[in-house]
Amino acid sequence: MPRQTLTDRDHDLLFGDDALEPGDAVVHFEHGLARYDGEEECDLGDAHQTLTTFVYRNGGKMMLPAEEGHDFWRFGAPADTLTLDRLKSDDWVRRRDEMIVELRQSADRMVELDRARKAAKASALVPDAKALAAFADGFGHEPTEDQERAIAAVLEDLGRQTPMDRLLVGDVGFGKTEVGLRAAAAAALSGHQVVLAAPTTVLARQHYTSFAARFEGTGVSVAELSRLTGADDRRAVLDGLASGEIGVVIGTQTLLDDALSFDALALVIIDEEQRFGEEQKDKLRHLASGVHVLSMTATPIPRSLAAAEVGLVDVSVVATAPKSRKPVETRLGVLDEDTMLAAIARETARDGQCYLVCPRIAGVERMEALLKERKVDFSYVVAHGQMTDEDMADAMLRFMAGEVDVLLSTSIIESGLDNGRANTMIVWNAERFGLSQLHQLRGRIGRSQLPAHMLLMTDMDTDDDSDAAARLNAFSRMSEIGAGFRIARKDRDIRGFGALDGTEQSGQMSRLGIGLYRHVLKNHVEAIDG
Image: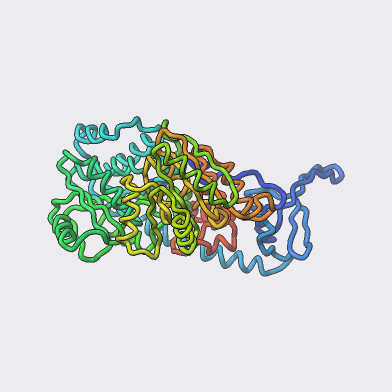
């Protein structure tokens, strides 16, 4: 089967680069890491040439004809944050060649795994058309164009006897879960079993609730398996999976327990795949022989993107916003208790709920003390990582059920929570969060018809030239629907692509840069494929 490549549109969404500007870091294949200083048109006798200027460490400077994408590539960070190479030094060539060898070895291993997958035998999942159509009717919304394309691609994959390996990338709140539901229905309604793995107990509970409601009346039994599952219920779930009585099981890392066995497992769905380690994902992929795998994420890890670009994993991109989705008004403000409390009062006055997010557990504790001192008239619960799973899940589920007005937490709420009544978020000390974190947090609100508001509060000068100020200003400007792809690309410029087949997220990338990494990888995989 030939490798599927990304469409131009999806490639631009995932990898699109802004034009190079003076001050950007670039990597010249022969001369190494430099600062790009623009181009000059020069007349050399009868010849007219465009010369590119590269500036190196200790004032080294070179002007020569050079073409981006052929002679030099974007590194993926501002030059002033890096240690540039010395001009005419052998260090670069040695380092480059070592990294290219390692990268090619990584690619070789990934290609071997991909070939083994394609040679394996999977169950072709072809449900009754009427039963699947009835299930689809339960959505209650008109699917977006991207959702329809993704669903069609997944159903086509599942209908083959080659195991599916598809990555579903979609901005927060753009409807990835519905694609997962349709995939689960295709498997379960054709008599097979489904595993859905989520990174947290709260997200697993949320998925369990929505999946159980959608499968009601279909004859498919849906179960939950996490640390919240009691001993008796756990034994019943294990027995039901082994006998085939349970068609869909939703859980956390608990699904990796060796005690689990399945009667007819055919599909594994990994939600928020970036939150699982490579070893965990590998175990999920091998829960049974020849299973189909659907991975879902709003912020794909560099390894997954690199594999997608060279066709080692198929990709569907959901970038069309639901019609009801509205931009979240995002404002910068100074740290001020009265402003914070006024924002909460405005939200609760319209019968809404608020997220109040602090970067550290100590900050949550100080904020809780402040709320007690101010004797606030709204109800709230606290959630952070030092609480037990049971207590943290109980707090978050009470908020999701509408029992309290405010959820005071760390960034643990950044993934998965879907509460249409929560339409205000206040982020205290916002400068301490990264771009992707802020975007994930913003995705928790704006999920109803009401206008949503995000207030980023900081005690720093947002007009200075610090990285944190630039990050906050850029984020507040990127508030349009679908900005997640731009934010993810900008964030990836900092994090890099990493080793293709390992858990390392910054290995070869930190030495080669984004552009040269992708160039070497693509050329090598194309050479392997002949």
